[in-house]
Amino acid sequence: MGTRDSIDDFVERACKIFPRLDPEVEGIVDRVCKLAKKFDGVLEHGTAEFDLNKGEYKLLLQLRQHDPDFTMSPGGLGESLMLSSGAMTNRLDGLEAAGLVTREPDPEDRRALIVRLTPAGIAKIDQAVNAGIDNEIALMSVLSPAEQKRLNALLRKLVLSFERRPQPVGVTAGA
Image 1 (tube, rainbow, N blue to C red):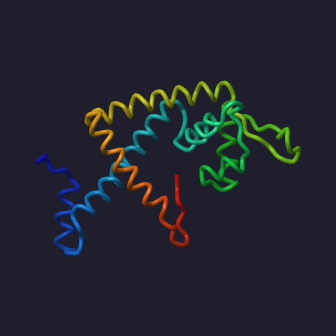
Image 2 (cartoon, one colour; image 1 turned 30 degrees about the horizontal axis):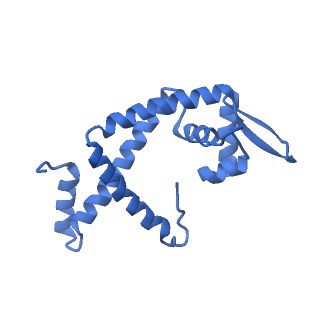
Image 3 (tube, one colour; image 1 turned 90 degrees about the horizontal axis):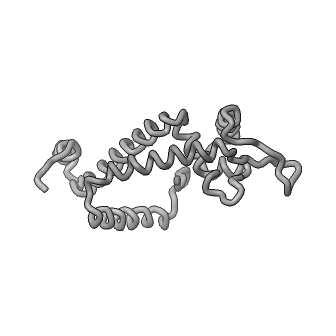
């Protein structure tokens, strides 16, 4: 390719200090980390256009994927989003006040609640996701379809290696 990015400069300096560093491995790790932060920023910016933060967006998306009734238990939501019950309550309070979700008695267990995505919540998350799709397509347009396929295959291989590896104590698998 011939073009250098900021990671090339960083890795070059780091290798002079730490000769055991493999520049290819370090470049991959640093680029993936940098891209994750960039994509996170794009998501945060995109969700703000819809008066949502990233956490609210992820919660609404989780509910949206639960067809046909768009419901989950607060505990199930908290587990899937890796949130404490207190954080889940705060997030649900805000979304309920905005009319995007409701908390209702669970018809199968009178002691429990379910969280339901409202029609307004469905419309909001659908708009936000569709705008995000447009952003993602624009960002990935620098890669040809063949390059996108190849990159996806390589990243999938790397993700699978993490998913199959036993986690060290105190480390969570993440989303």
